[in-house]
Length: 231
Image (cartoon, rainbow, N blue to C red; front, side):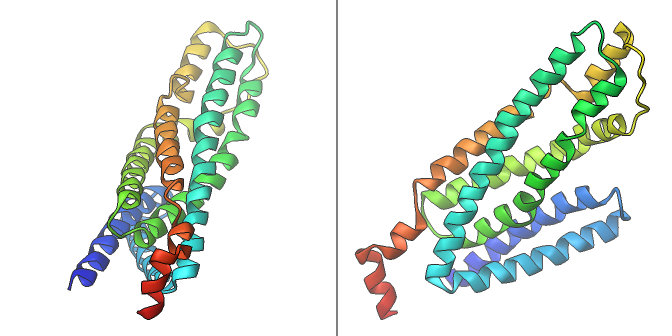
């Protein structure tokens, strides 16, 4: 009975996370009901795949620790790369000869990098870890904490930052030197004071802390392996 409750709890978290995050992500391309339906379908698929993996202790341990490592890398990229990117944009706007064309050209490379890191994190890393790590202990607390913080981060991004930045990326690239008023507009559009890198840094710290509770070490230790073999 307890195991069934655990599976239901993990599925509920995966479904809530995936449906909301993917719904917000896809609503630009699909009507909201279809976007939510796609998110729900992915939640079911990823939960079933993660549950299949969880029934194989060695594979589950490898996948869990591997996803923790990937989570550390993606969040480090966002936290440190994001902070440096904002500093570069802010410094460029202080220049007396910067043009709109140069600003757009500087900003555009950040979009594919953000997509490359966000897509696996929100589609695979967080949902799968919520299933594989759903057992009593510190690591489950850390995974739920990381998922909750990342959930806030994505909602914050889609509702506040993404529309302005995508509009800026599609803006006309003027070769004229920016005026003071135009610089103020770009500062607002780019959210140069964006504090999300701090949240990314906190999520990175949570993932990094969870790495110290290595699942492979637990599975391969004699104390844990003996009862597993008998079962």
